[in-house]
Structures are given as C-alpha cells and as structure tokens.
Length: 115
Image (cartoon, rainbow, N blue to C red; front, top):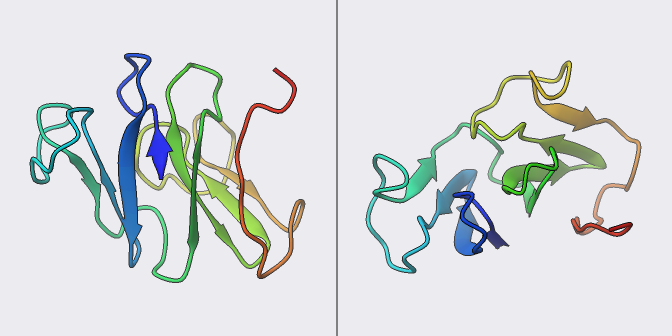
C-alpha cells in the first residue's frame, strides 16, 4: 500500500495487517509507533477489521492520502484524521458507501480517473 500521508508531495509505504495500519513517515524505515511524523503512524483497531481489504486515496482533494477499507461491498473511507468517526456528514465524519459500488469479493482500487 502506498499513499501521500504527510502532505509533502511524496508517497510513502504502508501496511495493513489484521485490522491495524502501519504508515511510514516518509523515511522508508521502521521508526516504531509514535508521534507522527517523527515516528511512524500506527492505527491500532481504529480503522478496519482483520478481514477488510485496504485502500488508500485522496478522498477530500487536499493532496494528502487517507486510509479506507472495503468490506462485503461497502466502502469505509477515512476523512483524513486517521481515526474512525462513524458514517455521517463527510468530511466531518467518515464516508461510507453502503452497497453503492462493488460486491462482496471484489478488489478495491482507488484513483483519480477524471483528473
């Protein structure tokens, strides 16, 4: 997984493992979980379940990537604050696309198709 987590115009790597996100701070080495961006960002049990399929993209159009997951045909997209705020009024809460695009078993893909 790759994304522009910091806002400096450069993508960094990330891993989604059993419901936990590990996002590199841009130096391409493991610095441990801690104060981002001085250390890597670890989202432990805060956005996604172990069986979810991870996705990353710029959902808000601000040039910075946010995380998301795809579960049984539903998209759960973070509003950029790297925590679960519940489905609601985006961008104040997270964006949930319930059975609107995709079916269970599909592989999620994000991109800027019209740009």
